[in-house]
Structure formats: C-alpha cells, structure tokens
Length: 100
Image 1 (cartoon, one colour):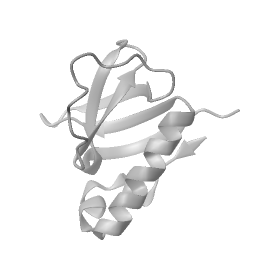
Image 2 (cartoon, helix red, strand yellow):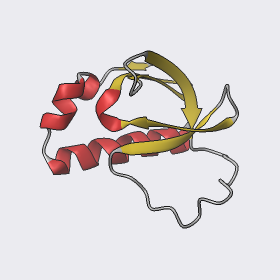
Image 3 (cartoon, helix red, strand yellow):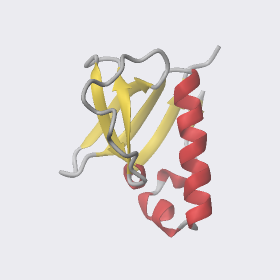
Image 4 (cartoon, helix red, strand yellow):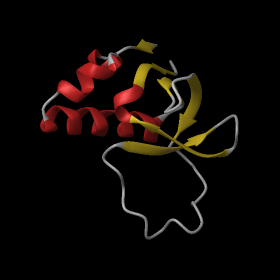
C-alpha cells in the first residue's frame, strides 16, 4: 500500500499546526511499530534516500537509553543496513507500508 500523506511536501509539514505535526508523528510511529515501512526522504545534504525501516522487534540501542526523543527527527531500524538510522520529519517525501 502506497501512502503519500499530505505532508509529502516538506513545506507543508512545517506549515502544520503543532497539534497536526504531533498527530502525524504519532501515526507514523504507530505504523512503524506494527510493520515494515519504506520511507523516501531528502537527506540533509540534499540527496534523496529510500529506506526500508521499522520499530518492530528491533534490537535495543546500546548507549542511548538516556537520550531524549527528538521532535525534529525519528530513529528507526534500517532493515537493509541492520543499524539505527534517522530521518527528519520535515524531509519525508513518501511513505509506503507493507500490505497484508
């Protein structure tokens, strides 16, 4: 299932209210806790990146237990790299979820 939410345009995410941004972040976190998701986003250097990731059945990140969650980015388990990676919420281009 291809999900391209209204926040696919990076400028739209930043124009959302704080409440709408929080709702979107909660929605995507919930999706990642349930299944594998492919996220396309722009890296900080301007290059495009596609990442298969999840928050389901992930190894505990050693040394990060005291780290505060960020509201500007999310750390996820990259299924191809088998390592923790992160992306910025306002740089998401598209979201593709696994279908049952």
